[in-house]
Image (cartoon, rainbow over all chains, first blue to last red; front, side, top):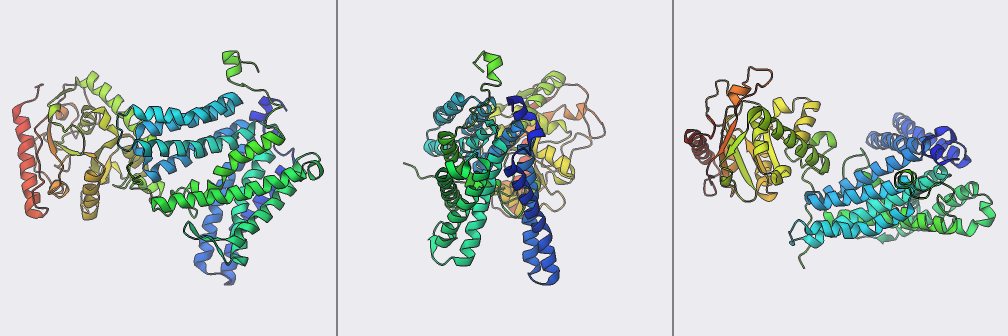
Length: 338
Length: 243
């Protein structure tokens, strides 16, 4: 597959069996979520209120699945653009929830750094990507000085850097997967596994949960839920990875198990991180963008810690985008080696 | 080291569709950019087509909060004031606009909130809690409210009696009220005209009024209204730099 085909050609969308499988499962689960509440409500098996709530959540999932899945299937350029929009919207939610948005210079500089990260991703220029992640915090700190307002400087810069690192650099790492020829199964597996990790934790916690995991931060989380999620998510990643990688079940088995454990643990920590933020701020949700879920950050919090860690893990053991042409935009413009 | 103090957006709990019609709305980066662009376009147009002339800016406080009140004869009034006030205040400047006109449809509400940064005022009922929300924001967030206390555009260009809502907003609040007289807007774009015509436009600000000690009851509101009406009339009679 050439770089241009990877970027904009949807003909290769269903080349990998993992992509086909995940799309089919997603469609089936969403259809079930839309139909089942109505059926159970008519049969009197569940209360009308609960059925309506599940229906609203499922409807939101339809929109989310389309907004996430369609760009990934269409091409890498669309996937990167979609993740850029997601990063900006998550950043905007964070800025509004913390009050950072009132500090114009910090808000603009952090947004600019996020844009630079995603430009490096689209260009497939890892050097610039790495530099943007490393230089974003000093840029934000430097720009904040120009306001000549030392009162509250640390808070403004800290919030700006935090938002940039988690929403910009974090989701930027996820977008960088799109520079690999096999980005579709990679991204879909990662996103699906991270979301299902939350579901596994919830179901295991409801079924076996007794002891609270971290009650002051999130009273609903239990030790059984956390352990159950690690086991089930690792199993899921093992199966997906085994099918996706050549000789996956034999040659890469320990790596995939490590990946599953890492993804599950960091996914849950990302969830708890947002719970800590919300409790510190005294807000229930980070926004109202998704009916039934809250804000975008409430839904994608788990990805914030998962994305950079998994990216570097996969890049170390397998490599990401190594078979694709770098400097797609800057190459012709600046004469950089392609 | 100073403790961190978070102040989430006032409209954080509102759905995106509800934000544009709420007095709690605060513009984000996109809103601020749209407002800044609108201000730039309006300023360029007013300078070119109306030779906008502004006098008395020294009467504005160094920093917000403040309330700017003016006579109202034309749709040019809000644009002229928006253009005349300091650019650094842009993000915190909210014209208070008639809810039944500027927020009557979702499309118009989006435009009014995004480009003008306007907040809706219910002219029929002037809901008490909405005014209380505005009072809270004025002091706490250091806003600039641009207000036309006559309540509607004057058809004959003459200054009419102010509404009591102004008194309810500022009586007892430690916020300066800056009177302004807008001259020429009625000639350029009166109520009965579909589009504006070129012509000179002048803005003159007068000395700020303070109502910190005024009682926040009907008697106090009436005192505020009569003092403000007299102040705007005095700025008018003091003459604008343009005829």
